[in-house]
Length: 394
Image (cartoon, rainbow, N blue to C red):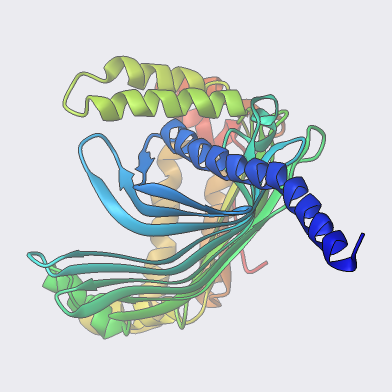
């Protein structure tokens, strides 16, 4: 056999060996596309496209549109890179939407999103569906920028948004974190000129800031914890939320989504039955704790000076008035301990504005059913049963 014939046979054998693999890759890309459509439908919206272009284990959803039964909006092409299958389902190395624009010339509205990318995407098989919470999972997600333009004025921008998640299994919760490194908000188009005048006087008609978050979700028992959700406005302060809930299982989430879809299908109809069903489902949750905190970065001083200037007073006098109001405002709660805590905390904060925190941490987890019953029958006892407290300048 000549060397040429040997090379031809080797090339032919390699080609024949690659054909089943190429066919499998193409099939997986098609399956990924259809599963994306199913996930969208499960979340209550539709997604469709003109065609799927396949190149080995990569694909492009061409002419993608998203919306509902009433209207579909074009969002461009979605690129799928590195589609494969493993024991958990269809896995995609990356999904990318390079650019999205939505405009309405009549209203002068323009909305832009640039470079959306999700990494290590998992479209779980049915047996693994609940492990991933019933949602499309991605290990990373990034958006370069978002902007909203009204009548030629850029009223909102957000840049460098990113989220990260750890992949869960049946024994390990899903941990997540995220941030937007910068956002801006132009308040100059507010219709209420009185409110706009106040914002200008305080120096907040143009706002800059950022946000950060992190938490975890155990899909096996439904324990959902948000350990950080902080939104910071530069030269104002940071508002933060945390909470810890039990019972937020994938089955509960799926039931809530189904009821929400039913309500969206008949927005003008009587949805009272679905509303009652939602309340019934929420009673499966248990409340462990929650907290809201404000860390000052000059906002408090500016507000005191603004009010004092309008009333011909000194900022210290305005602060003293606020201190005096607190115990009377809280007296109706019939919780002397909380009233004393809040009065002392507010006084300390106004004297030296650092941070102010309101927390709710009962001695034992409280079922939502009990919280709702207490709120309807004896609301005055709610702050006691939830262990509400106030503290300042930690």
